[in-house]
Image (tube, rainbow, N blue to C red; front, side, top):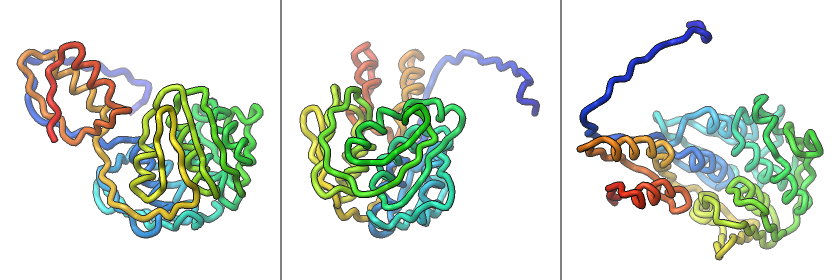
Amino acid sequence: MNSNQSQTRTIAPINSLRGEVTVPGDKSISHRSIMFGSLAEGTTRVSGFLMGEDNLSTWKAFESMGVTISQTGTDALEINGVGLDGLKEPGDVLDCGNSGTTMRLMSGLLAGQNFFSVLTGDKYLRKRPMKRVVTPLAAMGAQIWGRDNGERAPLAIQGGPLTPASYASPVSSAQVKSAVLLAGLSVDGETTVTEPHLSRDHSERMLSCFGAEVRPFEGGVSLTGRPRLLAQEVVVPGDVSSAAFFMVAGLITPGAELLIRNVGINATRSGIIDILVAMGGQMEMLD
């Protein structure tokens, strides 16, 4: 079909909304399941994985560094982890596609690896700011070069030994925090990140489950480097962002009765639920 061809859709109103919905897996957790599973010892099994382009960029990048990842079902993977020091220098540039999560988190991870790598992406990702990640990593001793004095990709990274750091982030960003923590995995010592407000904490929770010593505190988090990460069974919950559309549809449709299954309700991501309840929405969370 010609991509420039216009289409008209007619959407008729409905009188009721009843039934059950299962939303796709959480994208952020899917990314991290591959990253942490690759760095762990043993075979990590993942279910509920989101097979989206961004997550596939992370998948391909780790395969390029010697990790064997197999699809075992529609949304299921097996990751044969290589351990903290088992990644291999990629033979080509790592293409992050349109995924800022892939590029920013991997910048931190690759900064502590003993090899050279280059991260690039599509024309949109190459316009996005990267200095917010490059700056704290450079303070740990990372050697990273990018366009516009490190502000834009492609990013060239000469990995090597890093030093412990205590970084006060001027912005609340899970990507910045996660990049610093991933760099901290390779450090002998403690890495600390503080931020103005608590950003989503998927990385801290998952790293802890894989065996890292992670200590959250008010305003930040600390991580002890050189942990032994061990393979896990990861069940990726449904993405609350995807569920939000169905929540609102159910609340604005008179007489609606809708069950949305397997939705992640991490307190750092579930603000939409709090807001809808505060507005008078009748919702019940079932265990």
